[in-house]
Image 1 (tube, helix red, strand yellow):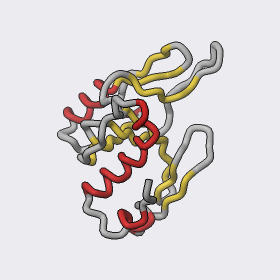
Image 2: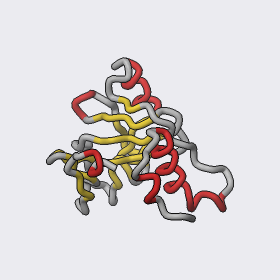
Image 3: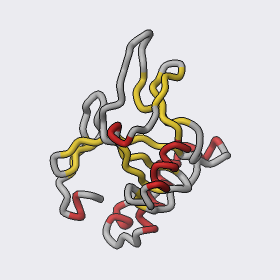
Length: 143
């Protein structure tokens, strides 16, 4: 989608970055429940990690949110991951008057386990429908 809008975008296969847009690297995380915690970084053993990546959060019921460590968002170690609270991200977005939000409908994870396999497809389709994509929507595979 970004490439079709004249952004220079590419998927990355790096340890803590998922996408590069116009030379800026981002991590991408999601919460298809719209609540709870989001795993920022997986931890092995007693490893100490720090969140350092600008991150795009795809949150059901909210949209696409931008956040980074400079925004003083609390993280915490939980079992085998460094996590951030979806509630805290929502608070930051509200405090900024939605400056860091692309308001778009991201569907919630289906309750029916047989439909979970198509969740990412449904999210992509919903986003393309929301922006009324004339081009990209035509290139979705039929499932």
